[in-house]
Length: 185
Image 1 (cartoon, one colour):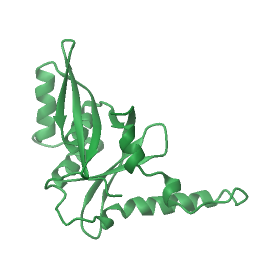
Image 2 (cartoon, one colour):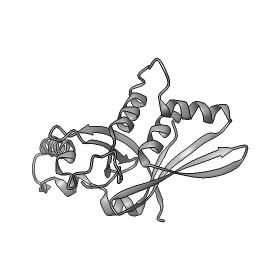
Image 3 (cartoon, helix red, strand yellow):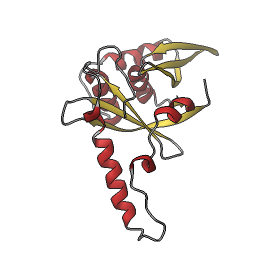
């Protein structure tokens, strides 16, 4: 396992062509992005937490946070640890009374819990190196002498690219069937 890099949830994307859901993580201190395909319930759960939507009854991830709080267990962080056969793996790092526990998790559940607990999300640097996307990887090369107003056009092109992520999905498995989370950019 490589160095762990802190990331934030940059956006939630929905493909207009096939309704795939994608959570896009962004490296906290750099312009590198990691798209992760997820199932609809997990994406909805993350979106509800990010938007602070009040719901009448707790959904599964809210219930989990309530259980952790009742047992005096703190979610320190979530870590996306490795990628194997187009499937991401993650861990929840928990602390209770000074004892640290590592719990295997799907990245979608780990992110949904981390957002609620306001815990950081970390991604193994090897994963970011392998499947992370930088704007310069998808933008046309800009010559230094060009007008700086072209930068806005480049960002628009990159935003368009991010918006199309779900349309290039190679497999026909629904995103909530194993493998539930894959890195196909």
